[in-house]
Image (cartoon, rainbow, N blue to C red; front, side, top):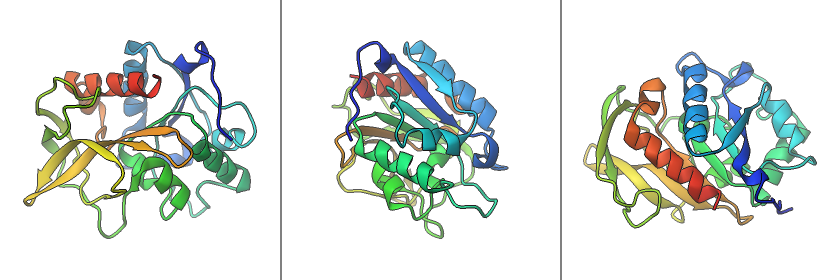
Length: 230
């Protein structure tokens, strides 16, 4: 089902930010959730943080869809299914099939391993045993497509972050930012038109608060939100 939105509710969205079982020992989710909320406020977007990720996904199965979904979660390691239960799975599938725009960042590419629906929603995924990142540190980010509204007028920039490398991604995504590692370019941000017609922006940056302190990165994210919300 494709969701319809009035102009008023398009500037309000749902933040699926790392809480509960969707956290891990390596990512400071309280800090990165705060960074995303700050960027959204600057873009004139009000995000409502979810207190329970699986319950929020289940609510998407047959409830009203938000104007936007922002995802910043990690891979649960409690041995339980992800997402948890058929209603949460149905909510994720409905989100994929809807026109609801999605902004997903960093470790969200790892959160539903081997889930074809999630990979199709993102346009790519972290592949265990193949994907990796060089040590955290100063990252040189290349603008590979200056013809998109998200990256127009921007030059290459640097920030402190992790550089996800060797992600699997669809050849149909539009790569806007990348980095070089061992002589090859690896995408860091892309735009993806989902099978249901909705749009996803995936940003592989965003490891910690220093990433969200970068003014250029914040500009990219604000523009991504504006693009997603039309």
